Image (cartoon, rainbow, N blue to C red; front, side):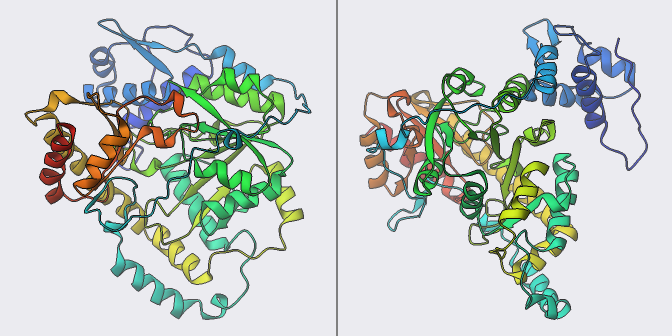
Length: 482
């Protein structure tokens, strides 16, 4: 029986989070051995004097992160992590001098980049996501006026290369409360969009390295690295994220991944694979860029723990943006450098000025510190959760619903729709376009398109409204039967 003391005092962490943290810590410390059966939800709830729903939420989060697994009609068991944790924390440092493989995108130059811009003529655009329709104009304009009033001298001064300290401090406070991350403000680097930060990282890490990204994934990354003069390859993923076999078969120095929410499949990299990736990075003296894409819009459970928080060897660079959660036109992103790289950044790149204006930095700092950002995320997440449920309900209750399949991954502001048809993806896309719907198949996100599944489409739904759903669903099914 688990021995757990929960603090039920008002104001403390929620009970489900306390229970989750206790079991997680017991597993990572080796206090509960691999394949040990955990108490049933009902038994543990009775033992601790809490609700079954509380236990279910804790078990659900642990399972989502890969700390436990379930057996049908048997219960929950501890995942085998002991050897992986020991390997990741004790492995010796070995420096490799890799050969440079040929660039993936140059070998597959026919796979063109698909622009995310909304073209004219489409009444329903399902090709990209942003939360712009919920942007809090009133609050933002008031805080901007406040910044103009309270920080007039500072607004006209040159911003440090890393950005204003007040914004970096509020980002650290946000990450601690939202992601459980302990970060020093000195480690935070502010930049005008992630593309600017990628360029900084290439300057910092070096162009004469071998970079790799996920396939499928955000193909623009590959072009950014190559245009900067770096070598970049796209590695296939499996059901747990980036393929470790492919990673070990090559000689790579920098791995760019989204372990907490892979785009576009929605895969969450489980904790066992995460420890394997950390061991790989330490063993090969490589770096992992953790792109925390769309994590604010995880619609079930708490956010997945970051890879950065698990890193004990200063090999993980954390990267996130406010463009997704606020609006793409606010080009404010940030990265968190491990201490070894921070020293190098201060030595080599401190001559730069921050690319975000002081006006926006002060405004965003107030927006976060006064609680508006958290309220905005909660309100937006709830709205999108309802929108998603209504769209899925309309799709699955349509008379022709047997022609489609909703794939089960938890995918934030999008989901994958598989269509049962003999028509080609190109023909389906053209038919959708003729009815005013812009939607892209999963094939567009693959560098190696031979690996792409047929008839699977990425449904980005954040730009539609509840009123659009009946029209969208009818158009979709009409197009399938066209």
